[in-house]
Length: 116
Ligand SMILES: [Zn+2]
Image (cartoon, rainbow, N blue to C red; front, side, top):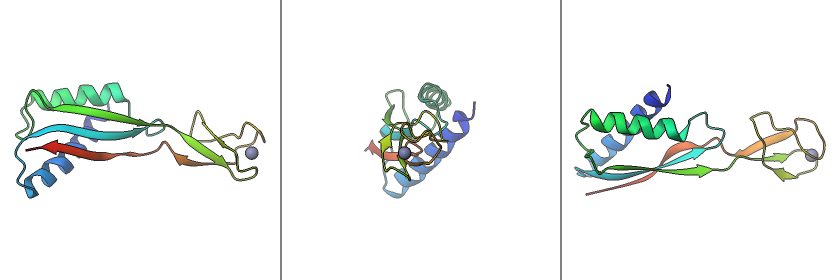
């Protein structure tokens, strides 16, 4: 499950930032997860719970992970039509050729976090 590694990176980023801001408890971590980002929200939740139970100092049992999905969108470079691709190779529903350029859906990042 590569979400364990992804979540490990996320918690490192949040932890380092929280330390710099003198935040000792992080109550909520908001993540943006694109539909094409290769990270499964369920697996991310699970990974977060596992790290939480391992006793990370800035998390407590009430700390929450909030996942905001980002819809996949592509734009056709021929007809400029915007559509929802079902994979990274985006085939335009109008032109029927893979002319699509992804404009969203690949994001995987920390949006913000709340702490005290
Ligand atoms: Zn097209």
